Image 1: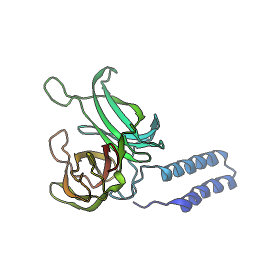
Image 2: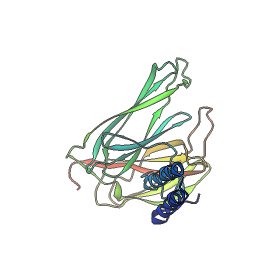
Image 3: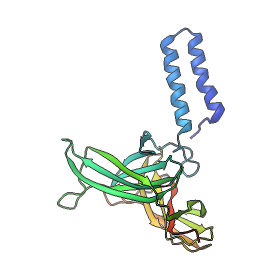
Image 4: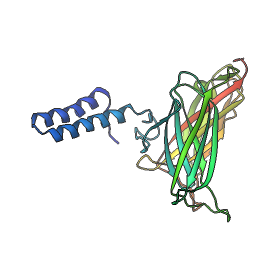
Length: 254
């Protein structure tokens, strides 16, 4: 998908406004101004991908809460949420997704967490769709995500920047990727999630897993399997994006 960026995009948006003003149409000028603002907002979105989904936005509005920016999207088997820490320090984050029926009655909730969401970094959280008494996926009308965030303990050392993706490829079962711990630190927990998108850039599923490259300079190959829909059939999607959710340990960096 073709998109204009940076100064070029701003000039194009400004051109709409200038033409409307020259035409003496105030309503058109206002509409053009809104277009320019929307255009700049899209260009500035932290969720415009640099790889995998070819600069498509996630298709959901960006919301803010407790020093976070996040987008959430319904998928067949639950809700996918991509969260960015806008603070200057790491956050110990807990998120709860509550599901409601058409009568606005809560029918279930799911919780996820990240002990070390680094400043300026993003992670993925998935909230599984509630099930009924027959263990079938329950239908729901709406959902709401709430967050609890506090500063990560000083006893935690983090370093997602050291987890390097060496290679990625598609296979019949999913996305296979090779990762390396490019540091001298032995991490205790390293986790990554692959989000799968449809042709319009909408998330349709995810697969998260621990990366066992905790040891310094170690390399690991994992397969992020295609997610299954509510009909238990695999959803391959058209594109994907891999997020390193966290890499941390308790204690010093050695």
